[in-house]
Image (cartoon, rainbow, N blue to C red):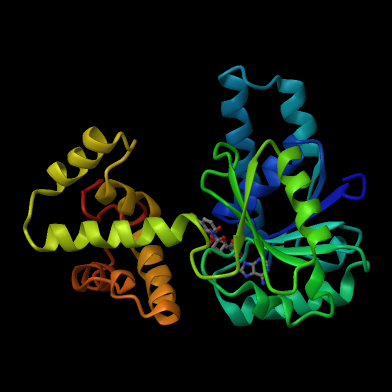
Amino acid sequence: MADIRRVGVCGAGLMGNGIAQTCASAGFDVTLFEIADAPLKKGMSTIQKSLDKFVEKQKMSPAERDATIQRIRATTDLKELKDCDVVIEAIVENMPAKIELFKSLDGLLAGHAIICSNTSSLCVIEMAAATKRADRVAGLHFFNPVPIMKLVEVVKTIATSEQTVETLFAFARRLGKDPVLAKDTPGFIVNRLLVPYLLYAIRVFEDGLASREDIDKGMKLGCGYPMGPLELLDFVGLDTTYYIAQIMFDEFKDPMMAPPTLLKRMVLAGHYGRKSGKGFYDYGT
Ligand code: NAD
């Protein structure tokens, strides 16, 4: 672990800013890269607000908050990542965009550096194949909200070396996370199990088995889940779930992974859940 000191994060959106914050809180020097100033500013302001909340809740001192922010260097110049020992890619879920970035990073970074993707559903080996360091490429899949959620899936492709996996496990632990190892298949562990469950909840609702409230109450009170499946779908985003389900269905051809008719129609209508103000429930806009 002595070899990881400087961490690069690409993308300052929902996941990227959380990952940058988590790495800086753990004491790493972080370079946060974005394609434009506006999303970079937005990402930095989200980090500031999130750290302010930790201070309000007395989980961090104001001095620690300020030191954490100072450890993050925000930039729109990719070259500033060149001294990083690990770079975590958290840009849009789009393979051509990720491949282009991986190629640029491969040409820029030192030979020992590891490149990771936070992708939820895309093939990590396809990104690794765009580089000359496939043994030093892996998935590092964080969960939202990153500063709070303990799990990180370390995704080993058929080309990732054991040494890379070991380094990433140690790195994840330094971040205060509890890592698990998964193969490079769509959904890894958590979404492979969670997505069919969520899709089945939509089918059950479509069939008129019960009201949305009772389906959610059933799983909360009957199984001890903190959120019911329809509430959780609204939280994750119906568009995101639809997209992941399509990728999983394409790969496995398992009917349980096929997006239900209602999900497709809700996405077409722009009913994405909390983020659009309407999903299975209304949130007011
Ligand atoms: P987001 O849309 O909130 O953020 C993506 C950011 O990437 C945007 O700010 C965009 O400006 C930036 N970007 C786009 N192209 C770029 C480039 N070439 N270089 C640098 N920045 C670029 O998306 P998100 O929800 O943070 O998801 C990011 C990644 O994390 C995706 O691969 C997604 O599958 C994965 N992921 C998402 C979640 C989730 O709950 N949202 C959970 C785990 C993993």
